[in-house]
Length: 312
Image 1: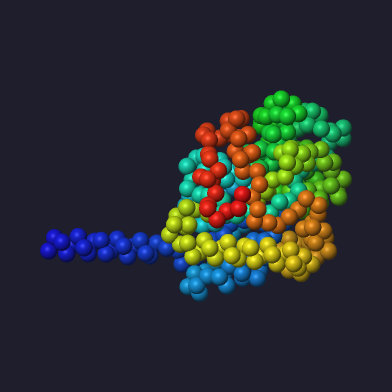
Image 2 (image 1 turned 90 degrees about the vertical axis):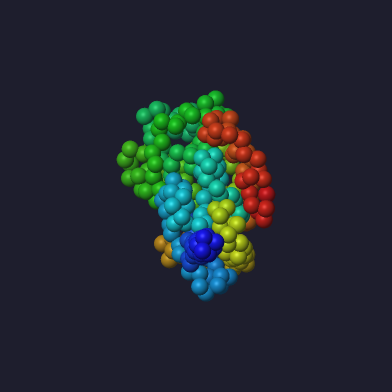
């Protein structure tokens, strides 16, 4: 009798574990054309085509990576797209996730509406700098440039204002408290077209090309649902290849998504320095800098940050 009870409990536990596998897969993204492959996946149902019909695909757009980390910790998001620095901060805090692919490389830069501000040295303490959040790729690029040009990586840490890319652009253009905005396409180009001055380019800050957006998955998804993980990678590659082969069609498809005219969006997606690719660049450089400056607490070998399939 006792053995039967134990066996019954074990069967119930195993059944419970099986039921915990999500019947839906949730993908999180943020704002901007850097996430165009994810938008293409969504609009063309590329991921749904690779999955069993029993698994539903859900898409969410979140304001910043703090919200993404919370969603993944709560089990509400399974795969997310973000920049490398906030991924590293989450990993450093104990999050069990890794990079599975690159998504895009897009221009980033710091613009200002202040006359006479032509370099970081011209930024005064009362000027506020909008960016998605502390620890974002924009913040770390700013810190890299500040260390190289001014000798102090944390020079501007107390001047940061947390705003999403659209809100940051609106705050800059409205002439309010925000004097500078570190952003990405298409907001970067829109700000320059509106007369804002570019004083720092992202690659200039980094000192080399780097991946702007990577795809990150939880290690539990990789272990427990490898078919879903592989389906995502396959669909992502299809989306990236389709954009490369059909750039105009991609712009026409995504124009309503970004609220832009197709011709204008095509220019944004093909601007010099932009590329949609699964290649991953810059993980070790970001990690080393962030460790040296105290943004990370411990060293993370590259093989602990990437899934085996990820190209580096």
